[in-house]
Length: 533
Image (cartoon, rainbow, N blue to C red; front, side):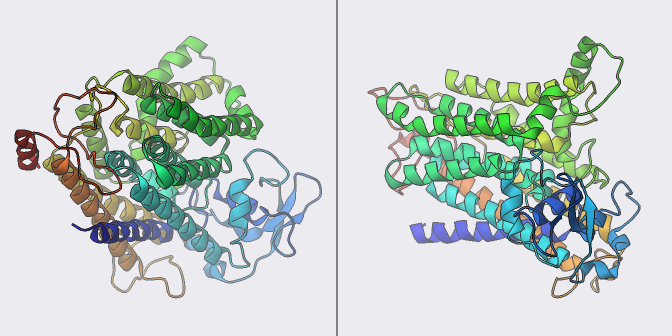
């Protein structure tokens, strides 16, 4: 396969990713994500006062914002009520202004970056602007994902693609193409960590490009949510642990991650969400002792983690039920991969995995205990989703182990294709469930006779579902083909410091990203790798 053909296949996969996210962007009405009336109002005021768009209110905390933004989630917490409650005129241009204090303007509750950049897409048509913002975020993720993939050394690509695939359905697919700041928080951690690994491993212009992507994605997270700053620090530390080499070159390259940590620390300390997390998010009058709260939350914590797959938690305003097949298939895939990864792969991997795992446990535990509540209140799965994405990526990623013990996770062709099929099915069902929640009966009719849907040139719900499901399937096919191909081509790690690693079982590719030939390997090992693939 030529370099051009590989590039075209990668771009095709990128188009498939964008189309699948685009289908999710169209699958729900304005106001569908949690607290979206707050985020919409904050976006329309993201650039400050604008005539007819956002104007100061009676005091510093009150602002006049589009009434349609405030009224958008008329169906929230009412699973039997579809989006037709917005009324037919909701999709028309124009709106009245209504005073509210439920807006980020004039406060520091959320960082202002996400709202500022999204505000440039705001217009006098709430519906059209919301769709555009969702598609822009879908495109942003796609471009960063594909660009990072192309720049990464081949041995690091599997941790990027598999890390995203195994944690995408359904919550990330729902939030990335949205106007919720969690979109940028997810994009940030999903791309920043692999880009940092590539930054330490690549040479020449690729090193600078990957370093730039890592810094850019970190800034995206810092501008979206206060907790993203904490997650960025955890991700940087994990990348440093996996990439550590006691060499002058490593210490010089580490200057960029150190700068990122400093920026993240300032952002975290200056965010209003930080004080909420430290002091507690609610006003619970629980009579449980601190010990009981700690033990109870530790025992229930897997319920919070599994919530990102829809088990025990729902999409939207926690009112969009999913068929059990969604969480069953998705959890089966991720747990299977994590089980395969259970083996000793050096202290670098141990430090990184334990560190990120501890963060995924202790961060929500601290917030829950300080809020005096148990799992199921205050802390939602979307808050810990970035940490779960990071944890899976760390488990899958190879480290700079001079003895060659850690070369990433190796999956058989059957395992890879099983993951592709199950995740494709889970995404298709989840997308249908989300659409059906808002459109009512008739979601899969050819004529699109539904209670609610977008106007204009938007395809019918059936067409959107078919395109989104097929596009996700295509992306998973490309993922499976590239993963199995790299497994068959795998050779031993390059020699480092005169230490030649012993031949090990093949894992995800080790070829240099510049397309040069892989390291030589014994004939028996090469034949075994090809046969097993």
